[in-house]
Image (tube, rainbow, N blue to C red; front, side, top):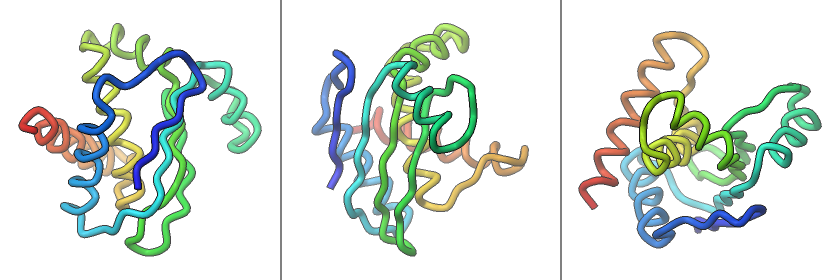
Length: 138
């Protein structure tokens, strides 16, 4: 089950479509969907989590807490809509496009993809692009 929670006045435009898309990605990766919670928040909210749980005193666009067991995916994905908006400007892309990339990024981590090395980051970017193409086709 995909849940969307809001700690700011932001709302997804089509949460049913996004939920179906995420479920499709999970299925395509031969994983099983359990409870996945997205929490959309602001920079202050996410910064506090970053400091408290990860000991990182920086702003970030997404933090995911993965509680998956094997291929059964579950966890909490926190997204700062402020950071996503700033990143969209920096990367010269539409806000929705950057938001969708961040949404799928967390799920791909749960599916086992990493992004610490250059090779892993390139593979992650390719999987993100495949997922975005899938969303655009839905």
